[in-house]
Picture 1: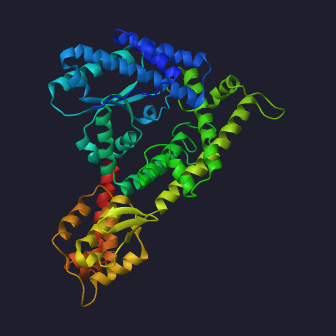
Picture 2: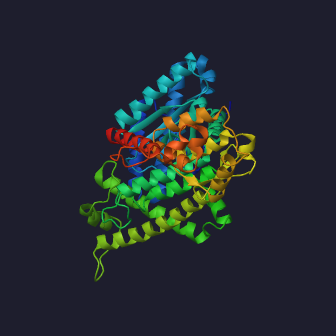
Picture 3: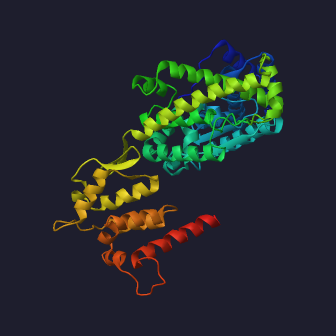
Length: 476
């Protein structure tokens, strides 16, 4: 076991000292509110204010852990200390807390069903909620994770853990958990689905950075653009820290000046977001026109001969949003165009499945069906070379025979929550569906006797699947 304290600057040392004398959760909650107000009163803005507030919450959680240990009992303290880690995730993990941001915390136990650790975690949770939710009126997100669950976590949960940061408890336990998470995240699945998730969010928010009432966090040109590009690059390179941008510079994906401008834009958006939170007195990331004049004047924007303070503010915002949009899209496209390992001798390049060896299907014919399963689950297509390789493998006198794994893989395609009809149609058009189901092959060219039917018997069957899939989507 190793307990790790933060690198102490004079500011963090003062916070730790102030927190160390707090006697109960109510005092801890009052400490958080007092220090948060001090950040505003001292005039801290942007990332500096966000990092300082994150440090305040860190100090509060470390004190809560000490109080919880004392409650569990001195005799059990050593065992409990080595049994849990407190981890910041999401924006809190990035040290980007705005004044009324959600505070997302994860508890990582060394083992489940241990009475000492269970007692400590229960005490931790109760004290944290008493301090941060009941006293400080903050919204706290709480999770309890064990390493064995990493591979089955949803994409959003995995993403929040990519941003995770150790706060208190057993550091080695956290480090082992993080290593397990890194091994179990599938890079291709992560980056392709992350890009799709972000594209949907952009479209639902209007699809343009030039909306006059922007969402500073989640809208086009907002902070989430940079978050997405960073997450994708971090998972692609296995560098789970801001140092991934140095790698992108070294690989000539972006320039030093572009990254420098990116941080200038991020700083401005955080300054604007902090001001919006303080003005609203709650979490609020939507900059409405009715608020822009007050925000502009509060940030020192004046009028010119042609522009009002709010117009000057928004002109600066749009310039920063333009840069965030450009650099994030550049990184996202580069990551998606690079080679991503899919396993089983398959890879993804430019959002298309490729085969790393011409002998792949000869050694294991089921890899042919696996290629379709991967394309379906990731929403991507095939490279022309792979299509040629598939045709050659299933046609002619030396055609391969399906092996025992083909059937189970076909069932996984049929059981998938989406893209079933599309996958089956492509498989039929390429001859693969007829290869694995010989009875189906002649149906694709069999015209029905009844003129009321629009399609061949085989294509009619595929159309039924497509419409059933559409009905399921409409009902969900």
